[in-house]
Length: 222
Length: 414
Image (cartoon, rainbow over all chains, first blue to last red; front, side):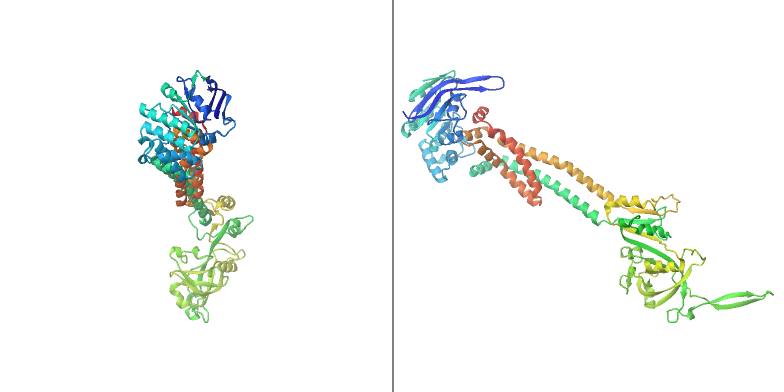
C-alpha cells in the first residue's frame, strides 16, 4: 500500500447567518499513488466540497485529511497546492490574459523553476496533451473547450504535483475530447505514478478508473 | 511574478490607462492646489515684508499734508518709542518751512551793498513842511520766499525722482547734514555755486517774549534742484535749528513715515489715536489727522488669505477624491477578476502574495503618473500624499478578494 492521501471521518458544513447546511457528513477513504479514482454522485451530494477539502481549499469541520501522513490542518496549504496537489476544473480555469505557454509556466514559476527549464517542460507537456506549437502563443479564449482543458491538464502535469484532483474535467467536452482527457489522466496515474482523483457523474468515465467512490447526501461509500 | 504583473498591465490597456490618467489628473489637482497655496503664502510673506505702508499726518479734514504748522508735541509723540509710536515706525520724513524776508548783502557774496535799494520816506516838521528822506534799505529783495527744510528727498516733488524731481549736491547725504547748506534752483546754481548768502528769515510762530520773530542765518550753496522756483531747500535739522534760533519754537509742517512691521498697523492706529484723529472731510477740529494708507495692503492680504482658506477647504476634498479614485481604480481592476484570483489561490499563491501582486498591478502606473506629475510640478510631497491616498483606496478594494477563501471566490465566480 502506497497511500498518498487519507480521508479520515471527514465532515464539513456550510454556514451562513441563518443556517448550517451539512455538505459532507462522513467520508473515509484512502488514495494510492499510481491509481486513478472516481468519485461519483448526484448534483449537490458533496462531491466538489470533498474535492475542495482534499485540495486544501477548505478545512474539514470534523475528522482530518492526511497527505503523506500530515494533516492539511497543520500544513501550509498554499504550499501544499503549489507543490503537491493540482486541481483541474470543469470550466478549465486558465488565465485569460496569459498565453497558453505562460499559463503552463505559471505554476512552475511559482515553484521557482527557472524560465528556460519551465518553458522546456511546458513545451513537452503541451505536446504530450496534443497542443501544437502554433497554439503556444495563443490566449485561452482563442482555443476550443477541449484544447483549453488539455492546456489545464498540461499545467497540472508540468507542475509535477503527484496528486491530481479533477472536478468534472470532461463536463464541458464532447465525447471525443472527453475520451482524450480521460486517457491523459489515466496515463498520468498508470505511467507516471501519480494519484488521480476524478469527480464525475458520467458512469462510463468512472468505469475506466481503478476504483470508484460514491457519495450520497454527504456520505462517502467505497 | 513581476513579469506576469507587467504582462497583465500591458494586456489590459484600457484599464491601465484609465488608472494612469485618473491618478495623473488627481495628482495634478492636489499638486496644483498645494503649489498655489504655497505661492499664496510666499506672496503674503513677501507683501508683509516688502510692502511699505505710508502714514501721513494731515489736517483734521485729511486735505493738507504740507504747511501743517504742527506743535512740537506731535513730532515728540511720533518719535517717542515708549509712550508714542516711535517703536512702530521707520523712515520718518519731516519738513519745516521758514519765510525768507530778504537777503543781507555781504562783502564777498553775490549780493553787495550796491544791490541795496533806496528807501524814500517823508519827514514832517512842526510847521507842516515835508522833507524827503532817502536812505539805503536794510536788505536786498530776495528772489526766494520759502526756506524749506526736508529730511528726505521724497518729502518734496522737487527732489523726489518718482515725481519727476531731481537734485545734486556736493555734500554727501545732504538731507541728514546739520550744517547751514542749501540747494538752489538749477538755473541759479552756476551763479551762486559755493556762495554763502545771509538771509533775513521769519518764522510763522511768535516768540513767547517778543512780537518780532525774525532772524538772520547764512547758508552755503552746495547744489541745485530741478526747477526754477522760489524755494531754497535745506536739511531738516538745519531748518529746525535756525527756526528755533529765531522764534524759540520747534514745529513741523509735514510728517510722514512707514510702518516698521505691517502686521502692527492696527496697534499703531490704536496708539496714534491718543494724539491724532481720523480725518473727516467735514471736521473743524484743530487736531491733526493721521492717514494710514494700508487699504491696498489689507485688501491684497485679505484676498490672499481668503484664497488660502478656500484651498484649505479644497485640499481635504481633493484627498478624499484621491482615495475614491484609488478605490474606483481598484474596484474596476478586481471586478470580473475573481476567477483569476481564485485560480491563483488554487495554484498555491498565498493571500499576501496575491494582494501584493494585485496591488502592484493596480499601483504601478498610478505611481508612475504621480511621480511624473510630482517631478514636473516640483511637488514631490503632495504627489507622495496623493499616492498614499490612492494606495489606501486601492488597498480597500483589493483586500476583499485577496483575503477571501478561494472556494468563496469560486462560488462567487459561478
